[in-house]
Length: 273
Length: 265
Image (cartoon, rainbow over the protein chains, first blue to last red):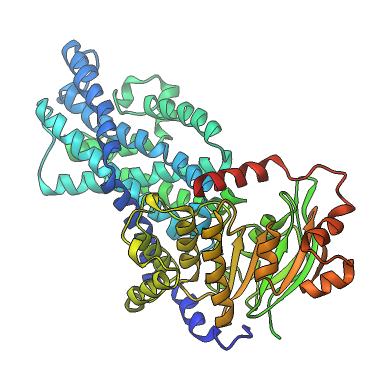
């Protein structure tokens, strides 16, 4: 028991930090900080739009002309637009760990971890801020895809579906990145691993070619890759023609996200040790 | 006197190096306890354990009445910490930094504005509250960090080398604020330093740490009587003399301190 007379109001506060509303407040405190910083310096949002633009404009246009990839009733540019959105979310989120290592080196992470805020809240706050960046990517891909005549859907259900899937995917890959950061601990090692991870995740998925086109062994890997389910869900909402079914897509993405959040909440404090 | 911090044989090993080696200390409530030691003496590791950032390898400690391992969350709610590294977010304003802390520490919504205003006023940062921390001087950053750590009214405040890298004027301002905190008597402060003047001026009790162990501790008068020296510097050198043959400070500790000094200077 506390031996101080002054402990009484503090006890109430300490209890407060464990409640559900406190949990949401802690998440939104982290999210608010990230949004404020992003609003002050939005340059990265624009530089990040270059890569999906190139894929859609160059790669997409060439492969639409050659008709080398069988995409059924969809044009290749319509088929690949959701894949490129998923890719840009992946590339944005996978380097989140670097920022966290940077915060550790600066000292800001220490400040978060000595607070009574729940570790899960700190992780989810970061993941939510990746979601905000993901939504911006989605808007950019939508604009380019529409301009190219790939015809993404604009009905409310489709837009909400895309937004939810983008939020979940950003959260998933940024949390994955956070876990990696907590294991490798230095920026140099992380850079190497980040590069090694992104390309296999992208190519071993249905982002730019359909699953049946792949050799059997690659199909097995693609089926175990969460990005495949992200792409499939986005494809269903954006242009129609997902092949795995939305319930499975959401179940896999949500399940993997929940597992990663649980792991990250355990690993996060080890980053400052 | 009630103990605000009490450690018993607290130990932390990294691989086969004992960073903190069976440290037992008691800091009374409402006092300032100084941990004096050179780079790599184990001061920061000890503070990291007391703030629950680092689990001990063995031994135990109670902070604000709670066990640092079993009741870590309750310890966190009752303590404040200013790391040696610059922990304020330079891309936010002073007020935004404080607001984030208020929310993470569960300061009730209706009390936040007032508490933030009080903290800013106490640390003499009112005029700079809405400027980005990027434009703050080193002394202002340190004062903001102390304000952040005090916002929720902690029983124990941990300061890891609070004035390293500050110019004499900025140092004085921080010292004045800390002295005022002691006069209020509600907060126990544990600070690490290798600034003899700081230790003499602020601390009610001083422990000299070397190679992870507390070589000697007591009030300045105790230390003088025990060592036969008058100046704290001489007492420090004598206390550490037995171990002077080995290398002082590890590379990481030195690099960290230079980085902090560079960012605050």
